[in-house]
Length: 81
Length: 221
Image (tube, rainbow over all chains, first blue to last red; front, side, top):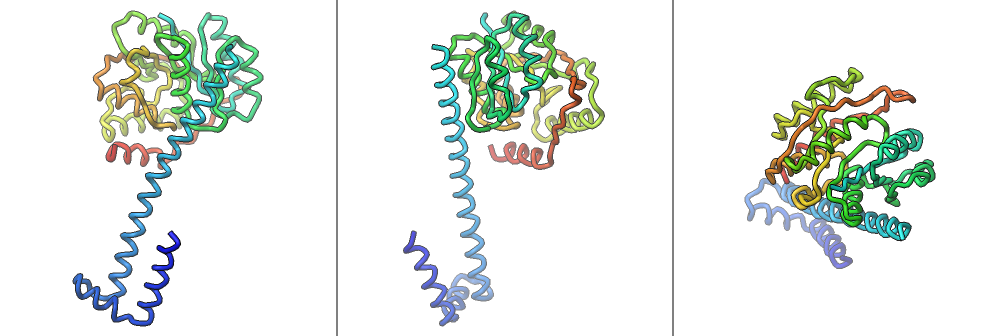
Protein backbone atom coordinates (compact mmCIF):
# COMPACT_ATOMS: atom_id res chain seq x y z
CA UNK A 1 0.00 0.00 0.00
CA UNK A 2 2.94 2.26 0.68
CA UNK A 3 4.00 1.77 -2.93
CA UNK A 4 0.50 2.81 -4.01
CA UNK A 5 0.69 6.16 -2.23
CA UNK A 6 4.27 6.77 -3.40
CA UNK A 7 3.08 6.21 -6.97
CA UNK A 8 0.29 8.73 -6.39
CA UNK A 9 2.74 11.38 -5.22
CA UNK A 10 5.11 10.67 -8.11
CA UNK A 11 2.18 10.97 -10.52
CA UNK A 12 1.09 14.29 -8.95
CA UNK A 13 4.65 15.65 -9.12
CA UNK A 14 5.07 14.57 -12.76
CA UNK A 15 1.73 16.02 -13.88
CA UNK A 16 2.40 19.23 -11.97
CA UNK A 17 5.72 19.64 -13.73
CA UNK A 18 4.60 18.40 -17.17
CA UNK A 19 0.84 19.14 -17.53
CA UNK A 20 1.10 18.07 -21.17
CA UNK A 21 0.92 14.47 -19.89
CA UNK A 22 -2.74 14.67 -18.92
CA UNK A 23 -3.60 16.84 -21.93
CA UNK A 24 -2.26 14.07 -24.19
CA UNK A 25 -4.08 11.38 -22.21
CA UNK A 26 -7.34 13.37 -22.44
CA UNK A 27 -6.95 13.66 -26.21
CA UNK A 28 -6.41 9.93 -26.52
CA UNK A 29 -9.53 9.12 -24.50
CA UNK A 30 -11.54 11.90 -26.14
CA UNK A 31 -12.21 14.14 -23.16
CA UNK A 32 -11.99 17.96 -23.37
CA UNK A 33 -9.31 18.97 -20.93
CA UNK A 34 -6.60 17.16 -19.01
CA UNK A 35 -8.07 18.35 -15.73
CA UNK A 36 -11.45 16.87 -16.63
CA UNK A 37 -9.83 13.48 -17.19
CA UNK A 38 -8.14 13.67 -13.80
CA UNK A 39 -11.39 14.55 -12.08
CA UNK A 40 -13.43 11.86 -13.83
CA UNK A 41 -10.79 9.29 -12.95
CA UNK A 42 -10.71 10.48 -9.34
CA UNK A 43 -14.51 10.29 -9.02
CA UNK A 44 -14.56 6.82 -10.48
CA UNK A 45 -11.79 5.72 -8.12
CA UNK A 46 -13.66 7.20 -5.15
CA UNK A 47 -16.86 5.34 -6.00
CA UNK A 48 -14.91 2.14 -6.41
CA UNK A 49 -13.16 2.45 -3.06
CA UNK A 50 -16.37 3.49 -1.30
CA UNK A 51 -18.05 0.41 -2.67
CA UNK A 52 -15.22 -1.81 -1.43
CA UNK A 53 -15.46 -0.22 1.99
CA UNK A 54 -19.23 -0.66 2.08
CA UNK A 55 -18.94 -4.36 1.28
CA UNK A 56 -16.23 -4.75 3.90
CA UNK A 57 -18.21 -2.95 6.61
CA UNK A 58 -21.28 -5.05 5.88
CA UNK A 59 -19.24 -8.21 6.33
CA UNK A 60 -17.73 -6.89 9.55
CA UNK A 61 -21.17 -6.05 10.97
CA UNK A 62 -22.36 -9.55 10.15
CA UNK A 63 -19.29 -11.07 11.77
CA UNK A 64 -19.77 -8.96 14.89
CA UNK A 65 -23.34 -10.14 15.25
CA UNK A 66 -22.27 -13.75 14.88
CA UNK A 67 -19.60 -13.32 17.56
CA UNK A 68 -21.97 -11.54 19.94
CA UNK A 69 -24.56 -14.27 19.37
CA UNK A 70 -22.08 -17.05 20.08
CA UNK A 71 -20.86 -15.40 23.27
CA UNK A 72 -24.44 -14.82 24.41
CA UNK A 73 -25.57 -18.40 23.79
CA UNK A 74 -22.43 -20.03 25.14
CA UNK A 75 -22.77 -18.05 28.36
CA UNK A 76 -26.46 -18.84 28.68
CA UNK A 77 -25.86 -22.55 28.12
CA UNK A 78 -23.09 -22.55 30.71
CA UNK A 79 -25.45 -21.01 33.25
CA UNK A 80 -28.10 -23.60 32.44
CA UNK A 81 -25.67 -26.40 33.33
CA UNK B 1 -45.97 -28.70 20.61
CA UNK B 2 -43.42 -26.86 22.74
CA UNK B 3 -43.36 -23.12 22.13
CA UNK B 4 -40.74 -20.70 23.40
CA UNK B 5 -41.69 -17.06 23.80
CA UNK B 6 -38.79 -14.92 22.61
CA UNK B 7 -38.69 -11.49 24.17
CA UNK B 8 -36.06 -9.13 22.76
CA UNK B 9 -35.34 -6.26 25.09
CA UNK B 10 -33.23 -3.15 25.41
CA UNK B 11 -33.30 -1.11 28.61
CA UNK B 12 -36.85 -2.00 29.62
CA UNK B 13 -36.03 -2.82 33.23
CA UNK B 14 -39.12 -1.06 34.57
CA UNK B 15 -41.55 -2.55 32.12
CA UNK B 16 -40.20 -6.06 31.70
CA UNK B 17 -40.79 -7.06 35.29
CA UNK B 18 -44.55 -6.73 34.88
CA UNK B 19 -44.52 -8.43 31.50
CA UNK B 20 -42.54 -11.41 32.80
CA UNK B 21 -44.69 -11.73 35.92
CA UNK B 22 -47.81 -12.12 33.78
CA UNK B 23 -46.23 -14.44 31.25
CA UNK B 24 -44.59 -16.75 33.78
CA UNK B 25 -47.76 -17.05 35.83
CA UNK B 26 -49.61 -17.98 32.64
CA UNK B 27 -47.24 -20.90 32.23
CA UNK B 28 -45.26 -19.75 29.22
CA UNK B 29 -41.65 -20.81 28.66
CA UNK B 30 -39.59 -17.78 27.93
CA UNK B 31 -36.29 -16.81 26.37
CA UNK B 32 -35.37 -13.20 27.11
CA UNK B 33 -32.75 -11.82 24.75
CA UNK B 34 -31.13 -8.76 26.24
CA UNK B 35 -29.69 -6.71 23.40
CA UNK B 36 -27.02 -4.97 25.44
CA UNK B 37 -29.05 -3.25 28.16
CA UNK B 38 -27.17 -0.92 30.45
CA UNK B 39 -29.90 -0.71 33.09
CA UNK B 40 -30.95 -3.23 35.72
CA UNK B 41 -32.60 -5.55 33.19
CA UNK B 42 -30.38 -8.55 33.94
CA UNK B 43 -30.93 -8.37 37.71
CA UNK B 44 -34.66 -8.19 37.21
CA UNK B 45 -34.91 -10.97 34.62
CA UNK B 46 -32.77 -13.36 36.65
CA UNK B 47 -35.38 -13.30 39.41
CA UNK B 48 -37.69 -15.26 37.12
CA UNK B 49 -37.25 -18.82 35.97
CA UNK B 50 -36.77 -17.89 32.34
CA UNK B 51 -33.90 -18.39 29.92
CA UNK B 52 -31.78 -15.28 29.78
CA UNK B 53 -29.41 -14.58 26.90
CA UNK B 54 -27.46 -11.35 26.73
CA UNK B 55 -25.72 -9.66 23.81
CA UNK B 56 -22.62 -7.97 25.20
CA UNK B 57 -23.19 -5.08 22.80
CA UNK B 58 -26.32 -3.85 21.08
CA UNK B 59 -26.91 -5.47 17.69
CA UNK B 60 -30.51 -4.63 16.90
CA UNK B 61 -33.90 -6.26 17.38
CA UNK B 62 -33.52 -8.49 14.33
CA UNK B 63 -30.26 -9.86 15.71
CA UNK B 64 -31.79 -10.36 19.15
CA UNK B 65 -34.69 -12.34 17.72
CA UNK B 66 -32.27 -14.46 15.74
CA UNK B 67 -30.27 -15.21 18.88
CA UNK B 68 -33.48 -16.15 20.65
CA UNK B 69 -34.47 -18.41 17.78
CA UNK B 70 -31.13 -20.20 17.83
CA UNK B 71 -31.41 -20.65 21.59
CA UNK B 72 -34.90 -22.09 21.15
CA UNK B 73 -33.60 -24.58 18.60
CA UNK B 74 -30.81 -25.63 20.97
CA UNK B 75 -33.28 -26.09 23.79
CA UNK B 76 -35.40 -28.35 21.64
CA UNK B 77 -38.48 -26.22 21.06
CA UNK B 78 -40.83 -26.91 18.14
CA UNK B 79 -41.97 -23.36 17.63
CA UNK B 80 -41.40 -19.82 18.83
CA UNK B 81 -43.42 -16.68 19.34
CA UNK B 82 -42.09 -13.12 19.36
CA UNK B 83 -43.42 -10.87 22.09
CA UNK B 84 -42.59 -7.34 23.22
CA UNK B 85 -40.94 -6.68 26.56
CA UNK B 86 -42.66 -3.39 27.22
CA UNK B 87 -46.18 -4.59 28.00
CA UNK B 88 -47.68 -3.29 24.78
CA UNK B 89 -48.65 -6.78 23.65
CA UNK B 90 -51.55 -8.53 25.37
CA UNK B 91 -51.25 -12.04 26.71
CA UNK B 92 -54.64 -12.93 25.24
CA UNK B 93 -53.30 -12.13 21.80
CA UNK B 94 -50.21 -14.23 22.40
CA UNK B 95 -52.44 -17.11 23.39
CA UNK B 96 -54.64 -16.77 20.31
CA UNK B 97 -51.63 -16.57 17.99
CA UNK B 98 -50.11 -19.71 19.51
CA UNK B 99 -53.40 -21.57 19.56
CA UNK B 100 -53.87 -20.96 15.87
CA UNK B 101 -50.33 -22.13 15.14
CA UNK B 102 -50.91 -25.29 17.15
CA UNK B 103 -53.80 -26.23 14.89
CA UNK B 104 -51.13 -27.10 12.36
CA UNK B 105 -52.72 -25.41 9.37
CA UNK B 106 -50.19 -22.63 9.01
CA UNK B 107 -46.42 -22.21 9.05
CA UNK B 108 -46.54 -18.75 10.60
CA UNK B 109 -49.18 -16.67 12.34
CA UNK B 110 -48.95 -12.88 12.36
CA UNK B 111 -50.67 -10.56 14.79
CA UNK B 112 -52.24 -7.57 13.10
CA UNK B 113 -53.38 -4.36 14.75
CA UNK B 114 -55.41 -3.44 11.70
CA UNK B 115 -57.44 -6.55 10.94
CA UNK B 116 -60.17 -5.47 13.33
CA UNK B 117 -58.56 -2.17 14.24
CA UNK B 118 -59.53 -2.06 17.90
CA UNK B 119 -56.26 -0.60 19.05
CA UNK B 120 -56.30 2.87 20.53
CA UNK B 121 -53.34 4.40 18.69
CA UNK B 122 -51.85 7.76 19.56
CA UNK B 123 -52.64 9.88 16.49
CA UNK B 124 -49.07 10.26 15.33
CA UNK B 125 -48.49 6.52 15.54
CA UNK B 126 -51.63 5.74 13.57
CA UNK B 127 -50.63 8.11 10.81
CA UNK B 128 -47.12 6.74 10.61
CA UNK B 129 -48.25 3.10 10.68
CA UNK B 130 -50.75 3.71 7.91
CA UNK B 131 -48.08 5.41 5.84
CA UNK B 132 -45.82 2.42 6.52
CA UNK B 133 -48.60 0.10 5.39
CA UNK B 134 -49.11 1.97 2.12
CA UNK B 135 -45.35 2.11 1.59
CA UNK B 136 -45.07 -1.60 2.30
CA UNK B 137 -47.79 -2.48 -0.15
CA UNK B 138 -46.98 -0.10 -3.02
CA UNK B 139 -43.21 0.21 -2.86
CA UNK B 140 -42.12 -3.06 -1.28
CA UNK B 141 -44.99 -5.07 -2.73
CA UNK B 142 -45.71 -6.69 0.64
CA UNK B 143 -49.46 -6.82 1.04
CA UNK B 144 -49.94 -7.40 4.76
CA UNK B 145 -52.33 -5.57 7.01
CA UNK B 146 -49.72 -4.83 9.70
CA UNK B 147 -46.21 -5.03 8.24
CA UNK B 148 -44.53 -3.65 11.36
CA UNK B 149 -46.15 -5.99 13.86
CA UNK B 150 -43.82 -7.62 16.36
CA UNK B 151 -46.21 -10.34 17.52
CA UNK B 152 -45.78 -13.49 15.47
CA UNK B 153 -45.38 -17.22 15.95
CA UNK B 154 -43.93 -19.83 13.63
CA UNK B 155 -42.79 -23.44 13.51
CA UNK B 156 -39.08 -24.02 13.76
CA UNK B 157 -39.14 -26.76 11.13
CA UNK B 158 -39.59 -23.93 8.61
CA UNK B 159 -36.71 -21.90 9.98
CA UNK B 160 -34.59 -22.35 6.85
CA UNK B 161 -37.30 -20.51 4.91
CA UNK B 162 -37.38 -17.78 7.54
CA UNK B 163 -33.67 -17.15 7.82
CA UNK B 164 -33.72 -13.35 8.02
CA UNK B 165 -30.36 -11.61 7.81
CA UNK B 166 -31.09 -8.04 8.90
CA UNK B 167 -30.03 -7.13 12.43
CA UNK B 168 -32.10 -3.97 12.71
CA UNK B 169 -35.73 -2.88 12.26
CA UNK B 170 -35.62 -4.14 8.69
CA UNK B 171 -36.06 -7.70 9.91
CA UNK B 172 -39.83 -7.07 10.01
CA UNK B 173 -40.13 -6.49 6.29
CA UNK B 174 -37.50 -9.14 5.60
CA UNK B 175 -39.58 -11.77 7.37
CA UNK B 176 -42.62 -10.78 5.30
CA UNK B 177 -40.54 -10.89 2.13
CA UNK B 178 -39.33 -14.38 3.02
CA UNK B 179 -42.90 -15.54 3.68
CA UNK B 180 -43.95 -14.51 0.19
CA UNK B 181 -40.74 -15.63 -1.49
CA UNK B 182 -40.80 -19.10 0.07
CA UNK B 183 -44.58 -19.37 -0.25
CA UNK B 184 -45.10 -20.05 3.42
CA UNK B 185 -48.61 -20.65 4.67
CA UNK B 186 -49.40 -17.62 6.80
CA UNK B 187 -52.41 -16.24 8.60
CA UNK B 188 -53.08 -12.88 10.19
CA UNK B 189 -55.06 -12.62 13.41
CA UNK B 190 -56.40 -9.44 14.98
CA UNK B 191 -54.58 -8.15 18.04
CA UNK B 192 -54.88 -5.10 20.22
CA UNK B 193 -51.83 -3.20 21.39
CA UNK B 194 -51.76 -1.22 24.59
CA UNK B 195 -50.12 2.16 24.06
CA UNK B 196 -51.11 3.65 27.37
CA UNK B 197 -48.74 1.80 29.66
CA UNK B 198 -48.23 2.98 33.23
CA UNK B 199 -45.25 5.22 32.71
CA UNK B 200 -46.74 6.87 29.69
CA UNK B 201 -46.46 6.03 26.00
CA UNK B 202 -43.01 5.12 24.64
CA UNK B 203 -41.46 7.48 22.17
CA UNK B 204 -40.13 5.82 19.03
CA UNK B 205 -39.13 8.14 16.25
CA UNK B 206 -39.48 6.75 12.73
CA UNK B 207 -37.07 8.37 10.32
CA UNK B 208 -37.01 9.00 6.58
CA UNK B 209 -33.71 7.13 6.52
CA UNK B 210 -35.61 4.00 7.52
CA UNK B 211 -37.84 4.26 4.46
CA UNK B 212 -34.83 4.89 2.26
CA UNK B 213 -33.02 1.84 3.65
CA UNK B 214 -36.04 -0.35 2.90
CA UNK B 215 -36.25 0.98 -0.64
CA UNK B 216 -32.54 0.34 -1.19
CA UNK B 217 -32.96 -3.25 -0.02
CA UNK B 218 -35.96 -3.74 -2.23
CA UNK B 219 -34.10 -2.58 -5.30
CA UNK B 220 -30.78 -4.20 -4.67
CA UNK B 221 -31.40 -7.40 -2.77
